[in-house]
Image (cartoon, rainbow, N blue to C red):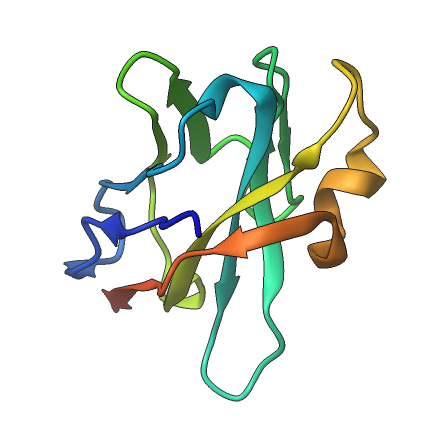
Length: 129
């Protein structure tokens, strides 16, 4: 059973930057696409960003230009650097591992939560105005 513990969530002010990370406990991290999702109070969980096994990145329109997803296959970690944070970014952020896929996958596949087979417990990010 793969574990995906997230870390780095905290209370910040609007306009601040924050980086959250996720550690992968499995053996072959480089075979999988990784994603970040978030769930705000009273809302459905939504896609934030994803990075493929070859490093291609995809973002939700709401975070494009502000957030950057990256991965370190040696350390088996995936990170999300968040700049210019807004109160609307307040949510629990979840790390997720997809099924093993070919090198090239569509944005639609990565944005679909059913494409992911392992999830972290979440880390709380709160942005005060």
